Length: 411
Image (cartoon, rainbow, N blue to C red; front, top):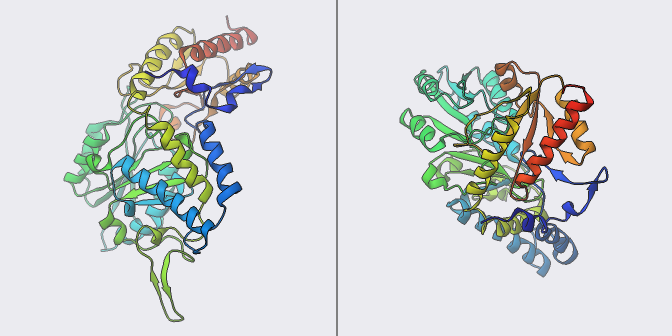
């Protein structure tokens, strides 16, 4: 079983104080903290191996290239795909944009039809804005799958939307970064594929918590970011099926994505290099390998550990007068992401008061403004927990909320 206190010792940031208080970090949906081995990997690369990859035959370049490709191989094994199907980007947002600028550009409204792209009301802006852009550009239509009253994806509405003529793509999050809802993605993919619809899955929130098998899932595209799963910032991943990637044009053009360049023409490189133009974020990709090393022995125990946090958090937070949890009220198919409103206190004010006590939460729209509009909420406070958090952190959060209520004279 996971010992969050022991794990916390591996993360140097927890040795510091924030406003003279021990750091209680509850903003993991935004980014996770980094264990020492990840930080050391970045330092080690720049200290001992710094060179460009795929460019030289000297020792440093060969070492850098090998280490970079080791991470790709590790990731491919981790999600059960081939190395050709792993594309490194800067972040999940860029991964989605890659699909938009390449696959969607070549497949939406190309036959004189009025094509449809589906997204959902619980999506992050990164899985909304690119589809708005391409829909306008290609004169396609964007349709929204609704959420139910219990803050879950309305599968009946999804089935209805999939029956709309000329639906080409469904873009759906595995887990809502606001609601904590875990969507039944495998079932959703099957429903879409029965209608001949491709599926892009935003896996940013699920990758830190569960191991994903893309062959079992059978999605067409899957995107995630290293920084939410103990890795560095500046590294995103796009998985797609080889046959789909081979049919897509490159996203960026220049060095390394080419096989041959002549005055008259250029021949694109093979997969995956075809989609990785220029010098990549070498050190941080290499450090992602160490994040996977750290995560792998824990990953099978994380769901049960997080479910305990969900049960405890829902129970204790619901006792606070005036607090309303914006998310499923039961612990089934849910992560420890607690977004809430507190009567009489704006989320920004609450976040500031909590920060004064060393408690880091997020306030605002969480890059999900359409969801807040649907729910008719101007903003929420969000506490999101991970493997180095404990029930004691939830207790600290509750004490902090009660202190805020006293400051605002709400008790």
